[in-house]
Every structure is written in C-alpha cells, then in structure tokens.
Image 1 (tube, helix red, strand yellow):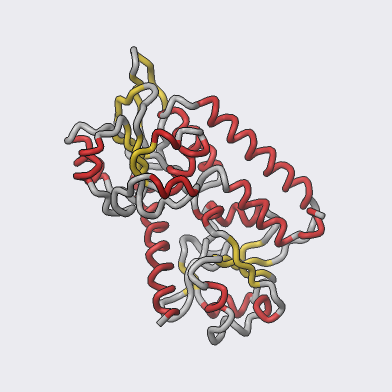
Image 2 (cartoon, rainbow, N blue to C red):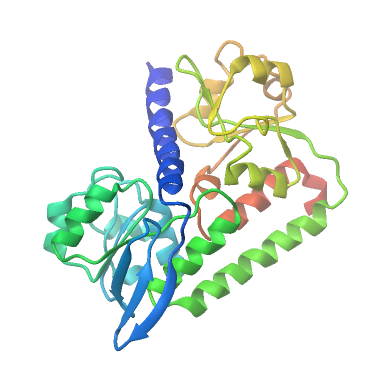
Length: 310
C-alpha cells in the first residue's frame, strides 16, 4: 500500500512536470519582455503570448506555483504575498500565507475576493483559469521557461521585472553564477560517473529526467553523465536501468522513497543500491526552477565528486 501511495504522489508530480513542458511548447517558449513604461504601469507579453498591463511595482501578490513563490521570497517580496498554492512549502514562512487551492485547480472565487494587484502563474495554471481571473479584473501573468538551465535565470529575471525588482533579480543570478563557476572549476577534468535520477518507479512505470530536460543539464553541470540522456521527456524503463546499472542513483528524501526503492525487487539489486550510492536529497532544489537550483548543482557535484570539495 505504501508503494502504491508513493507511486500516486510521484505520478502526480510527474504529470505536473509533463504539463509544464506541454504548456511551454504551446506558448512557443516565449518569455516575458518589457515593452514600455507609462506612468505607473508596464506593458508586458507573458509566456502565454498575452499582452498584459501591470502596475509598475505591484503591492499585493498571489503566487500560483511553488517555484514562483520561492523566487518571490528570494527577491525579498515575501511580505507582499497574500496567497499561494497548497504545494508552496518553501521557505517556512509560506505556512502563514493563505492557500488558494492547488496548482491545477486554484480557487478562483477566493483569489477574486482577495483582490491582489498581481497574480503570477506558472505552467500548471491553464489559460482558461487565467482568462477567468482577467474577466474578473485580476491582473495575471504567466511566467515560465522550463527547458534549459538558462531558463532558470530568465524566470528569475522576468519575475523581477514584473515586481519592479530587476536589480535584486540580477543580484540573485550573479550569486548563482558564482556558485556554478566554482563547481565547474572544482570538477574540471574529472571523470563523469553514470547517474540515474528517480522521479517515479514501481508497478506503474519508471520515470526520470530525459536528455531534453533542465534537470539533465544540472546533472551534467555537476560532473555526472545521465544514463537517460538518450531519451526525451520523463518516461524510462527498468530494463534500461538494469542494463546501464548506474554508478549513482539520486532520489527524493521525501515520502520514504529511498526505503521503498532499496527494498523493491529488481531495484534493490542495482549496483548503486548494493554499494551504498543510492542518495536521497531534497528534490525540490532540482525540480523547482529558482534560486536554489545553483545549490542543487553544487549538492549533486559534492555527491559525484566529494574529493573536489574537501
């Protein structure tokens, strides 16, 4: 039963990740760009290709994505958040902010009642939901760029623009770049161990980060070689995992994932499991695009190349 519950949770997360890619493709991978400033308003084209007029520095904000919430706090605007999704759980201060539904079904009625200056949505919020908010007079923008690690910087930069915090956004990006450059310098010339990243496993299938994902890029930036780089998307197979028998397996530290993986037939016999190289981490530092992704790259590099960080 525990294994089935885990699978349900993981597949739900996977569905959101897949929806992210689908919506990004539908939007033509556009990112928000400033057009002009008139008085106290800015004109923007958001990631859905919509022209949106927003306050130049909005006061009250509602976030409809965990990564958006993290970025808002990183930009030191967390005090202006008056709503977030049930999945927005970092930093700890989010617990005191009202939850306005989940990621795919935000509570439109409650958002309208709260009447924020700006709602920032991510890919899991459908264009239909955004249209309902707009019809109610709630200014809403969709911001995402989820195919490459450079998209992390773009997302931070764009949220900084719509919040009037561009200088803070550039500071965050600069700090991330320093961390990434330090990692690159430490691991330069080192051999690359083979890596498998667990998104889902078990009776309902195996899921991971394929070669066209930003998580694949993070594995490579950390000095690893993703065994699933030969596929696109998130679906993989147990047969391939067994065949390639990776040096390291990375999984979530939540939901008892590690304990289930290392006791499940077939998975428990993998070399990485037998030799103690099944490593559980906070997967949110990889899965959510934001300021903590630099920490994610460093965390992976410290696992793959511990001697380089002594």
